[in-house]
Length: 201
Image (cartoon, rainbow, N blue to C red; front, top):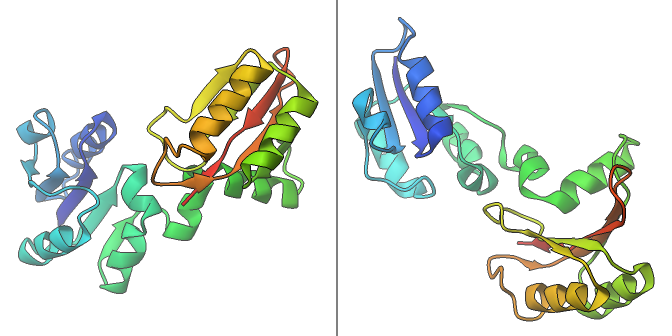
């Protein structure tokens, strides 16, 4: 069996390492891979979000199975894309990937089905988010919905700081790949409230 692992991080390195131990796997490719992965698989110079490039590689290399690691291609629908082409692909569909890619989606889902979670409220307008922050008072957490490479959560110790962060996210669009979506959440394990500043695509 010929396998393509999509991604270039430690997660993908681990996947490649484990797949290489299977007697059913004859060849392993990684796109784009990294130096460590290159020691046990064949790296392909193709970005994880380059669907046309990945499709050509899958066809040229006669790939039997695709294993996707990173959140970005999953959120963009890579599993749906290759499933439509009849290629076995391991990973959540674009709709299912929203549980990881969108804080608003996952929070709405949990609240809709009474799954225990911290309380939250989301906003799409800066003026509404600002009024809510003023009403709730700091300290607050401001979070960006969507994939923000671990940089989408900012702690605001004061109300003025919270408003400044909201403005930078919702008005200045520091996360340009998303549109503004903001919310509030209280955590029982720490003093203060959490304001979730979500961004949707």
